[in-house]
Length: 344
Ligand SMILES: [Mn+2]
Image (cartoon, rainbow, N blue to C red; front, side, top):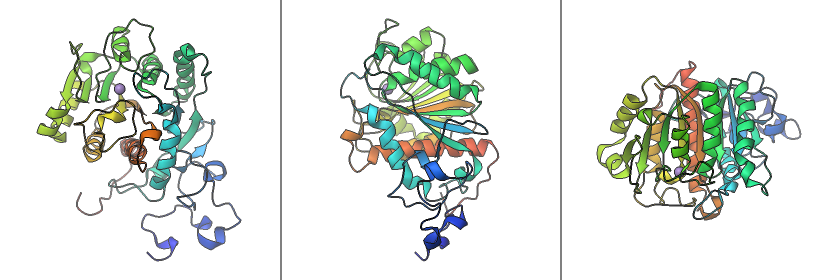
């Protein structure tokens, strides 16, 4: 590689590049960037790790997409630790902020005004308040008109996120990547990351007839009306077939995308609380996310990343990349033009 200024698709702000930047406004761009778009000079291994080096701010003026953390894991059934997920995903995302998007052939950071809103605050001593806390947090973001992308946290956080999104957008189709159905018996009150989608269906937040669960490889007595694409089916039929079923099932309906990182095989995502073997590869998951462009997806989350069980940031990097590629979908939907690089 030659000088930093020669990087393909490289840093967006040439005035803050290289030796001249020393002692000026380079670095820690999460706090010091002027404006909301583009990239500047910041070492991948240094600085404040906001998601994709975006500005840490609660000013949502002119913002297209908001990334926020929901560091709650008191609803886990096996190993806790997803409360550290937002921090881990942010750290892993720094490497993705260095170059323009691949394979889209544009820079989502130039196309969209994206900010890191920080984390949802709650009192860990009152876990029973989590639903109202997350819902209130989400309402403020959704009121701005921006697309909300949440980093879990265990999967229970998706329940209050669905409450807020359904209040804004109406009943939703759910596009649900997971090893588990998360529709086991629910009493309407329990804090359980394995039953909240039955509650969401019972409350009319999501429509099972318009919803697809992908990568499932644990049993339930009933499908509760959801279309289920088990992991063996996904492996046998392939991602193009998965996308066909998702498009047919969701149709024109507004949809919410939730990605439990344990949808991935533990070989690709060891850093999670309830791993199950036989899951999707990271490449399969990315192919699936990249193929969702025709749908009206109004919100997204990635949950269950527990960095203390991770190895070499495999899991956190997968989660960060899934969000990155979802942002590319948003950018493409708003007119970003793709210039493919090589055969893909
Ligand atoms: Mn789940």
